[in-house]
Image: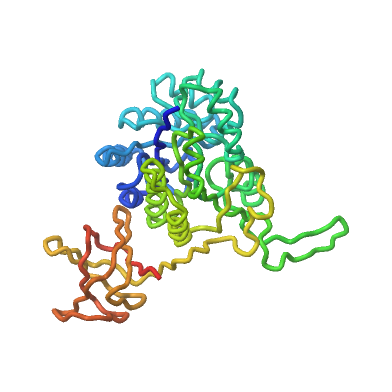
Amino acid sequence: MKLKKPEIMAPIQNFASLEACRDYADAVYFGLSNLTMRANADAFTLQNIGKFVDKCHDYKIKAYLTVNSVIYNSDIKIAEKIIKKAKQVKVDAVIVWDPAVIEICHKLKQKFFISTQANISNWQTAEFYKKLGASRVVLAREMTLKQIKELRQKVKHIEIETFVHGAMCLSVSGRCILSAYLYGKSANCGSCAQPCRKEWILSDNEGNKISTEGKYFMSAKDLCMIEYVPQLIKAGIDSFKIEGRRRDPNYIATTARCYKEAVDAYFDKTFTLDKVAKWKKELAGVYNRGFSTGFYFGTPGKEGINYDHSGNIATTKKILVGYVKKYYAKIKVAEISLESCGLKVGDEISIEGHTTYLKQQVDSIELAGENLKIAKKGMLIGVKVVKRVRRNDKVFVLH
């Protein structure tokens, strides 16, 4: 069987996220402010979705819209309005699972994929959705690689998408009621408060309580399959999905690039352990909670939990230094106000805004016509930049 090069699909929060992955992603997925599993993450509305999709297509990137939260009676009209808009602006596919939304897609002749929220864990379920008209299924994260291979062999003429990197949910395909029960924020409606990432108190039926002493017993490590890219390709997976619509552009750029390089290296026959070590080091440098292989090689045990940390343990620290005040397009210089800390020549910086993302080294610093090696907090300096930046963009130094 001739192996197909899988699509690299990146998570998108705003226009800056797209700029971050434009050179590496084949597709992106995003949501509006409602009816999505990341309701608090997305900056897109019915008003600006057309502009975003056009930008994706200008970059030769496919745009997939998520409409995959639980749908109540009052949501049906909203869902129809969203799908109509998706069709109008030429979204490449919508990611859905609720039968009501599938019916809307049929009615409007909109291409659709079946979300991981459907918990597709066997080949007959995949066949069922194929008969309903789905062109792709996003498999449950709880499937092993062996099970995925078996499904691929049984089911033809439908694409398979799996998560290869990013946060893992403690519950099956996000089917968790803990957040809703404790905080009134439903995970299944995109508003998870992530109680699994908190410290907990253990108690018995006699009322005895034991502190977990700073340990996190339910904080799952992030998925990272970079070293197993060849096995994923051989399994016949059509799309490699990266989780992280709430994460920053540097994470999106790094993850998309590393997986793109890994896929290309496999097909170029240059995939080596040295390259894997380099990619893992780079991936560890951006947001992560430690890495595991999830369910790909069996049900994870204690090695899949990060007992010591519930949040980011990235080896690279991102420190705010200030803000862009002006951009001089002719000379490609940003005027930066160092409001939080200083900057020096040789520092690696990132500049981020709603539509801005760049990462570069500081090659020179200028203050009132004088070149400096080190600039101190409180200074208003000029720095040559490789791309257009905008007023009020944030400037970070990376250590």
